[in-house]
Image (cartoon, rainbow, N blue to C red):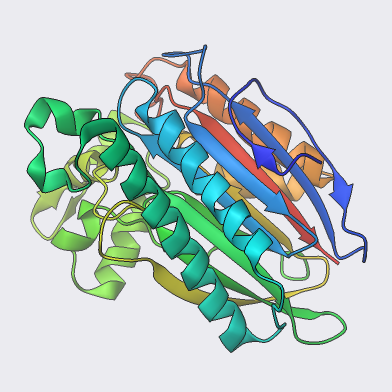
Length: 312
């Protein structure tokens, strides 16, 4: 498999690593708004246990540049590493360094293109075209014959899910970096709001109130990103246990914004292979994006990418 998943029409790819640890598939579809380019990118290096997804931002070509530069920087940084240890603390350090390498490469792109690297130094029109990207980066760490940990670095609203095969649960491991968190500080309330956002389909659903605000307010906030690869906040770092047979699923927001959590659970549960999961997630999201907004408020043209990894 070519690890450098970038622009182009949808593709399925499958590979077992030399040790037979993973089966990998991905699908990517460009937005109907710009079918000639795809601003998403993904990365699969099963021999290193490293997987990632990027959703570029920054106007015409800027998003595609940002996601591509970030992916290439991580590949190059990995090529320089020769002594990766399979323990959680080492993986946390590695994943942080890889994220930082991508961040620095993105700042260099901005300096080369605009002579600036900081959003705050730009006027409003230039900022719209400023290259940036989300990043969800995962390293799989074996801790036993059939037990593993996912160590991840995350910034933005691309997501990491785990399909727990023994429990028939599709678990969302990351929380979106968006304005919802700014308005709902209490974790329990925030979880309730996000569950509602992931299920809303009709205009009527948007009238339910949380902390005195209609859900439509939070629905509008869900795509206003509060962190990204190009910001100085740094990533959120997390650790998630997984077992042999579990599937690690990375999606850009074009997939999970168009599909409800129930939609995604059903697709994953009904699929017979990682190829089918990746293909159906992107395909169904694209179909939803083409619906009328007054029929389904989730409908949103966007690039759609799903990367699926089955852990052996």
